[in-house]
Image (cartoon, rainbow, N blue to C red; front, side):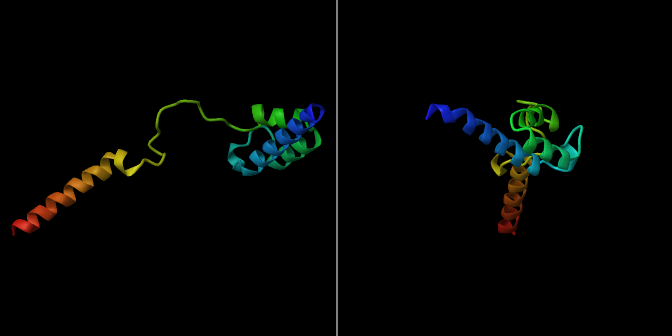
Length: 97
């Protein structure tokens, strides 16, 4: 069973790189067109996927804080919490009238 492990790892790496390449938007692909990267990944079973993972795609910075363009949960969003307070204040004003 252990003698098949290297082959399985190569196949898994190739499949992962292939799917990652297909799912990557065209504007994030570096150095070569996406079609060429797919051909390289499929033709060169060990080197192709490794080169794709290190040089083919723009990678985002690891651990860089929360960006404002990312989705924020409602209980962490100060604008949403402020709007709840404003709605509550409006309801109180209506009840007083």
